[in-house]
Image 1 (cartoon, one colour):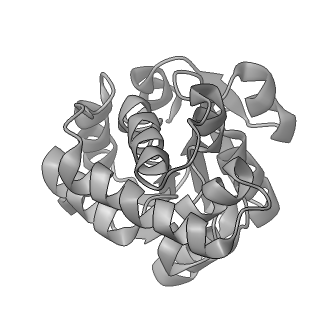
Image 2: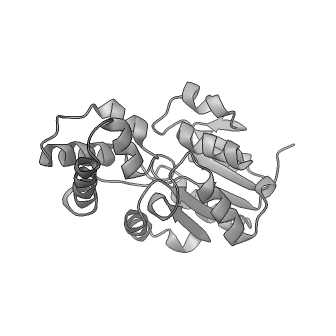
Length: 216
């Protein structure tokens, strides 16, 4: 029997919004602006879901913190102002989120984005009013640390057993496992199926409507 949940917590980039192309382009542009060598596109994609600081620590190990901070600042400038690569919601997401709310689910966001970045995305997608709360990597610890999930549970008063995490990366699924929360992995994002299965999600789905149909 499928389990009913009170709260469904979503990752943002790669789960709700198709933003990988823009993220990769902005990291490349930021590295170029700061005189750094070109970064490998696939390496950047593998860090999507982490906070920007944590992503750069993986992409530029051993580099001075001051250089990484400079690249992070340029990345945010490109993503928020200079780059206009479209970042649409994935097919079925807008209708699916409204359907979940209409069916009585509370929904939240746990993301590696910054607060300013998430607020801009919520405004652009006109979805902000649907979520009961959101957490960003610059407000707490980055995934896969479970702190942001613990904070969401504390704020909403929901028990871990009554919450579900949905994400497209192994960071999301590991974070959920460490928080004692069930998870569902979506396979249309940035991590492949083998990576997603490492931390044993309850289900892997190929589309957002498939997730909505699975929830009772």
